[in-house]
Amino acid sequence: MDQLLAPAPLSDEVADDEVSSEPRSLLDRLFDRGLLVRTGVDGLYGRSGDFESVVEAIDRLATKLGAGDGAESLRFPPGMSRPAFERSGYLKGFPNLAGTIHCFCGNDADHARLLSCIEAGTDWTGDQAASEIVLTPAACYPLYPVAAARGALPEAGLLFDLQSYCFRHEPSLEPTRMQMFRMREYVRMGSPDQVLAFREMWLERGTAMMRELGLPIAVDPANDPFFGRAGRMLANNQRAQGLKFELNVPVNSEDKPTACLSFNYHQDHFGTIWDIKQADGEVAHTACVGFGLERITLALLRHHGLDIKAWPAALRERLWG
Ligand SMILES: Nc1ncnc2c1ncn2[C@@H]1O[C@H](COP(=O)(O)OP(=O)(O)OP(=O)(O)O)[C@@H](O)[C@H]1O
Ligand SMILES: [Zn+2]
Image (cartoon, rainbow, N blue to C red; front, side, top):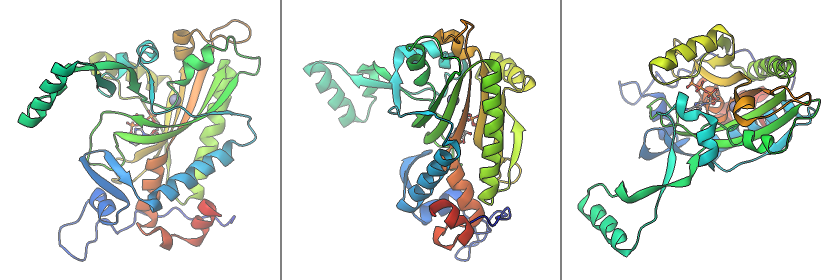
């Protein structure tokens, strides 16, 4: 159990195809094996039982790592309140990634028009109206208003454990960039010292976890993909101030490794937006650590091979006991 797994190189399964001379992409290999299931939309996939068993094992590891910290566990559905979403500021930074839920609210005549549009193959969505729900962009977004409604934080601050399907409109042929994926998060609210200590601790825990899974990793400063020209400045500031770190693993390629875990210090951003106060009345600071459950699963598949039954015994032991 304690035997260390050496970091595994990229499995040659992807480049090496015996059947045709054309190398098949990682995504095609995952489809071939039935690990991911095509839906006709890039970034929107079904998952096999094997794939899910890895996702669940990683989720359990994240639980085990945080056990003893006293985090309050909360699970939200993958949609959140539209007014809360508007107030969160997400649309300032990432209008291009947001997904809203629109619904039919018409009468019989509108219904008939909708059906005839579908029949004719023309746009039927014109009469769809924005509902009160938007898709959750990151697991922690529904949490802040809930925490704010409880009043000032206790002296020791607060710690939450979340997991949610998230939506981002970023269609891609890289299997690691999905439109709907799961994020496991721990979120800390408190003083700057409390939340920075939390982030430090999780940087160490996350790094150790990935090493124990036999994955080669690098911890790098990062920035969020803020939209537009103003966004470039925000991204530069975020990097310069060391607010975001990512734990990167080569999955799609060696040159452009994939962020599998993120460690974000929001300073007083959400505390100010949601009027979350520390016990002494100062604005609360927040930080979160996000585990990309599908991305870690894909990293394991890429490095240890697409047949999970053939993974090293020490790794299987670590994941499934
Ligand atoms: N499109 C996606 N598909 C699958 N997992 C994702 C996706 N976007 C983010 N994640 C996972 O969720 C975690 C937390 O999200 P975060 O917003 O910090 O990522 P990000 O910085 O936007 O990622 P990237 O820089 O790759 O776009 C990431 O570390 C990653 O593991
Ligand atoms: Zn978060």
